[in-house]
Image 1 (cartoon, rainbow, N blue to C red):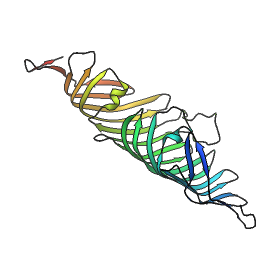
Image 2 (image 1 turned 135 degrees about the vertical axis):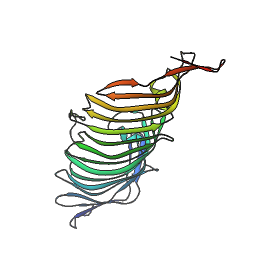
Image 3 (image 1 turned 30 degrees about the horizontal axis):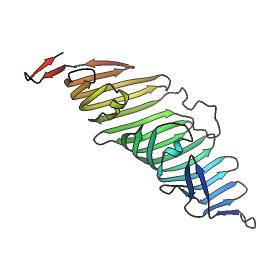
Image 4 (image 1 turned 60 degrees about the vertical axis):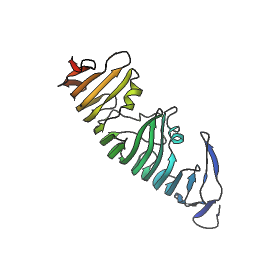
Length: 274
């Protein structure tokens, strides 16, 4: 640390620490200028041996921010533990976020990706996203999940409190949200995880709906289609088929429309309709 200059100059050639059994070190010299207002990060890149985390810009004594954060190929799991324990989510994260505001009222614009996203060891696919945050409002410009062959899309807004110095606040306040979601898939691995009594499910599934209301009282409106579908439970002898099925979701009620199911008699080669 050099006091003889203004601003004062902090240089760290070697930096190592352990967080949740994960070892981190600096990928190069950490250079920070210290002046009468706060800290100016000139270069600071941290690595866990695989990914990198870097920050450049100002963090001031009055807790105001004007900085950019760059994350490249970082394992998401150690960072999730900072906010919630035992959340079974893994991914390889890359993003760039421009920060401003202060620690109690942050604002940012961010774009990035989560590759090889999994939940409870179930592969969900690769996600890309673009978001904006200010005044507790998260605006989702675009979220796309490619699950091969499925595609899931979302955009809209909701409220979340990301104050960094408060611990007793309501993170998801009772304020309106509006999210438009669409999906198309023919693989139902998530169904098998949520409904272990399902032995087999197939078909072409499409859905488009709007999620409104509040996090405590959500409302769902939209439609879902299933074509050339099949469903087999472990405790049922036969597989149930449908050529097409339409479900309408309105004010949290699901109405089945135009649903005709049958089981197939392979011996007599005919359909037995329900």
